[in-house]
Image 1 (cartoon, rainbow, N blue to C red):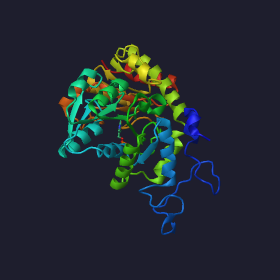
Image 2: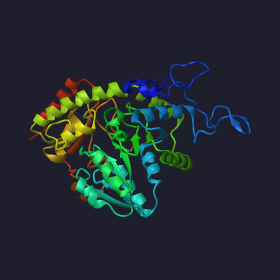
Image 3: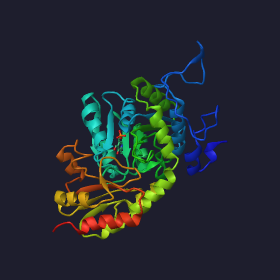
Image 4: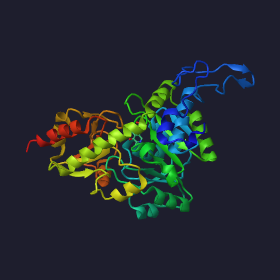
Length: 388
Ligand SMILES: Cc1ncc(COP(=O)(O)O)c(C=O)c1O
């Protein structure tokens, strides 16, 4: 069967999974082996020789994610950060990369501290402003790094327009699609060269694994990424690959449930006097709502809001909203709060955070798949009871 003809939800369930010709198990087995026995000195038994380089369980999830993103190859890695690290190894010292000033804090730290030290050049600009991106282009610009919506303030980058800017500069585009997943945004359909994920988030969806994925569609990039992931030893374990494959099968239904709760919560927050600003592209009040409608297939379930009263008020909300746990990460079935000031973005300098718009008031929410009514009531109660 040609899986390319199947719809998204069908591919999520079926693509890559049939790997057990011996017993016909309905799910892909975990192949917990470091090595594979050869038939003779020139022939492997089934196309695999060593698990760092390739493993049937990992190739199952890779086939699945490549198909969902619309690429031709995926390499599943041990963390989202290792996926990002692998793509940076496509470039060399002296190359210039443009990224947004409010990308994920760990990515910012990797760029600003590790790769800058190695001689790479970065410009961190407000990429929602295409002129700022254009103005940042240099003769040595080799890559434009897209993360949209951004973390935690949900600013959008116009993907198609940014791809055009990159093309005219001869630069590659790489998109971190973690926040929306391929169910809600497919950057390759808008011209992006390479898409990556922290599969820790929506693709796995159950907060029980850390992992990453890099999707390519051009032969040269695919070969480079395969070589780098193998050479640096970044691949994920068969067990983690199996967990992500288990999770990804329900991506569509989960994203629908996530979005329902997020929209209900955003509407309540927008009307609540304790929430000063709500950052959610699904609201008509979001400055880039129209762009979200144009380039996304939904608004997702990540949002932030500024709570009136700063840190004491934020602490009150963390303590009193019982269905939302305060924890790093996002994209799991359970709702989470996150405090960028002291958690995900603490590796940025205070100046960089303020410049990006992150303050002590900012609370990020990853809306889970619980009943929207319960989530709204719980959050509302926490906001209603903030001491004056
Ligand atoms: C947008 C984004 N990209 C990449 C990462 C890094 O992924 P990981 O924690 O799996 O290494 C994160 C982690 O929160 C993230 O939010």
